[in-house]
Length: 87
Image 1: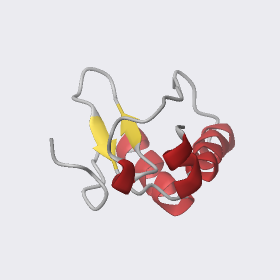
Image 2: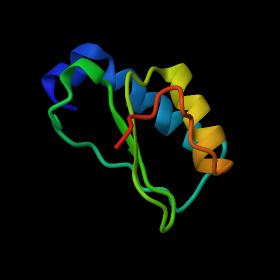
Image 3: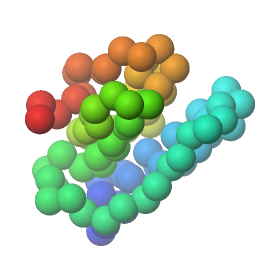
């Protein structure tokens, strides 16, 4: 949630994440806000860690992309490759 991320829509992205969690009544999910991670052109950025699996970083995450990530990755266990950044 650095200034570049906010300008790119990070507040709306965060709001979509929190709304999805509430709507789906999900538990045991931790949402943390961070500052800039140095990938300004890819903002808003969301990182997802599920259990012991490796961290996946997603770029250009809009509210629509949030819904895909939450359904497919967080709930379904499948990485959304369209927005995933290669490590």
